[in-house]
Length: 241
Image (cartoon, rainbow, N blue to C red; front, top):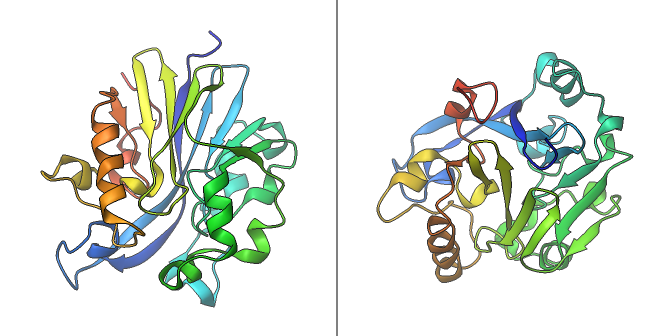
């Protein structure tokens, strides 16, 4: 039925980082392999990507790996999807590991928050290496300003700044209720389940970040799909039986 989606997590590579990169000040010095994740959601009519995964591995973002089986085209092909068929792309933010394959979706409208696009032009020094300028500014965007209910049938976005000033979270209706895709606002299940919740190690404003966390907690979604959580792949799709 139109507006009731099935969400498929896509494993599009891996990065090795300190645990604190995803969960601020947690387990200092501990190295962890984190997946690069995008999501494909469809209600049978709309074919939507939430984020597009990381750029091809190179020396800028090492250690960063992507096997042939993790290439975006290959992963989508196993779902019977061609990138040309994707109708819409919603970017949680413009960091290289979430907006690195925009060019594959040539027929899609690509949505981003206006504040994210503005920040990417001249980011704070701590985040300057997180944006692939040549890539992101080759993309033509549909600009969103703040919360947008029913951006598409059954899909809304809310502004959740903190990790970056223009981060947004995507709310997707399914047959079991609403799922939240928060990008790097929530990197791991552990971040959401901790009390107080844990922020990402890369952030622009902690006070604003915690306001965003409080906001998503109050949504009472049936499920949250964090930005770099390997346990997401315990299930091939959401909702699951």
